Amino acid sequence: MSAAGVALMLGGAGILMAASPAQAAEVSYATECVPPPISGLPAVQGTTKVELTVPAEAKVGDEIEVVWKTVEAASKNPDVLDLGADTVKPTGTVTLGGAASGELKLEGPRQNPPIPKNSPMVLPDMKGTLKLEKAGEITLTPGAYNINVSKPISTDTKCAPKEEVRPGATIKVTEGGGSTTGGTDSGGTTTGGTDSGGTTTGGTDSGGTTTGGSDSGGSDSGGTTSGGGDGGSTGGGGGETDFPGKEVSVAYACKTPIGDKNATSPVRISARKNGGDYDLTVKFSKSVMDSPIDIPANQVKPSMDVKLGGADQGTVKVEGPLNKEVIKTGAPIEIPDLTGTYKPGASGKSTLSPGVLTVMAAGTT
Image 1 (spheres, rainbow, N blue to C red):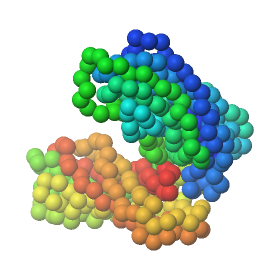
Image 2: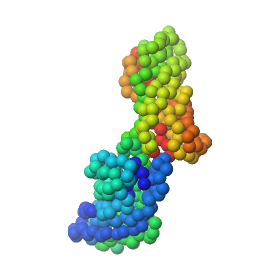
Image 3: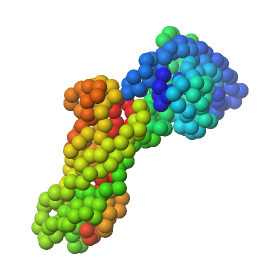
Image 4: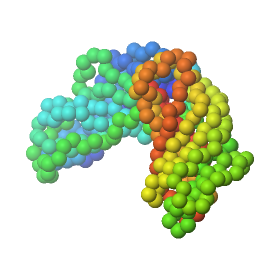
């Protein structure tokens, strides 16, 4: 299992709004966990041991807390790298039965002690809130879950039961006060590789476009200038609509699941005036890395935070389309044209320079 995909298990212990004491029960089930595709590692077969804690009794209209505690993970942290503190975040689902139906989503905090290589996984408890709508007995059965590891890059390991799982807890719901409207409240959301922990950062050469204007925040006139202080500028009169930036070489340091990679790529940022805004296009003349595995079509999504300078500050996000063709192992991951819109936030001339480049590929960042 991948170090970055890493984990397997989840947990529960909890209580919430209940007149009766909480009850906890442990359930074990065979589990298959699939590491991130980019890792190239096989699926892991193991046993999940979970303890669900809920109130033994509650009334219709109550909102109760469900807690999932990992008693034993199905896999250790692989013998690849140590995981730092507060890098692991679990999310999962509990299936409802009896007097309720559907799934309850649970979420844990990104909170864990350091986890050395080849040692048991230590996962925070996951929690969710359930609103009780009908009298009767409700069963709660642990199901699939996802483990996100944020560093050195953001990766997800997806785990699912490989056998029928018995309920881990039961709640006796009686008639009582409270509204019966609404549905099952989610206590969390299942997250994919949204946490950045491994982006590719640009080097020190800034390049791109200078736009500017008088009193309209950069909408009247401007010109192009080379970045990095090694070129002049053109335009500047008034009435220009196209501002082709100068191509500059940017050194990138890429953090990947298979190690760090360095590459230098020529980058050009150009702008076209569109009313009071500017349509941006960022072109890469060279790939920043080769693919470590076969990547299916529609699995690679690039984006960049273009840096603003001069009269304006901040960044502008530009994005490219998904890959239309399979990218074979060893083939360059070509960066298509990235596009976005710059809405000037200040009067005067503003510069646009290459910034952080992020490539989402096969579930990793």
